[in-house]
Image (tube, rainbow, N blue to C red; front, top):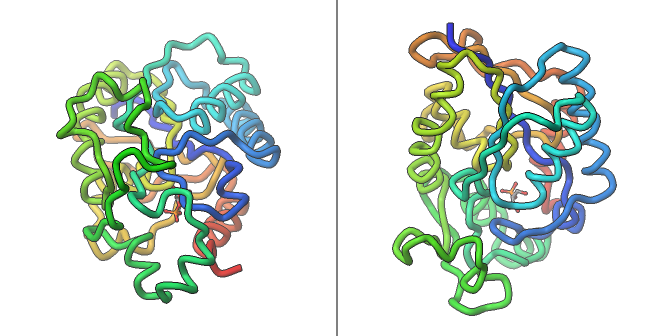
Length: 249
Ligand SMILES: O=C(O)[C@@H](CO)OP(=O)(O)O
C-alpha cells in the first residue's frame, strides 16, 4: 500500500452562495465556507488523519480552506505546493453568470450539458472581458496555448494528470498522508481517474464542499475502497444534494 490521500473541496465561496458560475475567478469563502473548512480540519483531527504535505490550486477559496482546516488540526506547519493544474474548471463565457438565470435562458438540458457533460465545454470567454484572467499575474508564466478560455471536464483531466503523477504521486509513494485542497470539478476529474469511472458515469458525480474524502491506495494507485470514504458521510450526502440542485432555486 502507498500513502493516504485526502481530498478536500473548498468550503462554500461567496459565489457558491450567490449562485454564480465561478471557474477561475478568485472569490473568497463565505462565512459558512470558513466554518465548513474548520469543521473539515476537526474531522481530520478526530480521525487521526494528519496530513504530512499539502497540495492546493492557486485560487484563494482552496488555499484558505486548507489553511483553516490545517489550523483546526494543528498542522499549519506542513510543506505546501500549489499549482494552476488543480484549479477549478475554467467556465468560459459562463464565468460570473447567475446559474438560475442561465438555466431559465437556455433550459435544463443545455444547462446540465455545460455543468456536467464530460466533453462539451461552455462557449469560450472573450479576451479582456470582466471575468477573464488574461491580466492575472499568477498565470503570466504559462504559454498562451496552455491558458484556457474554457474547459470541459475532459480538458481538466488532461491538464490535472501531469500534476498528479509528477507532484502528488511521489508524496504518496513516500508513504505520506497527502491533503489535496481543490475544487468541485478538478476533484471530479481526479476521482474519475482514481476510480476508473466512465465518461458517462462521471456526469452523476458531485463533490460536497468542506468534507474530507479519504482514499487508501494500492501499490498500483488503485483505491482499496472504490469511491473512498467521506469522514462525515451524512454531511457529505447533504452537501452533494445542495451542489446538484444549484441553479434550481
Ligand atoms: O461555478 C463553479 O465554478 C462550479 C463549482 O462551484 O460550479 P458547478 O458545480 O456548477 O460546476
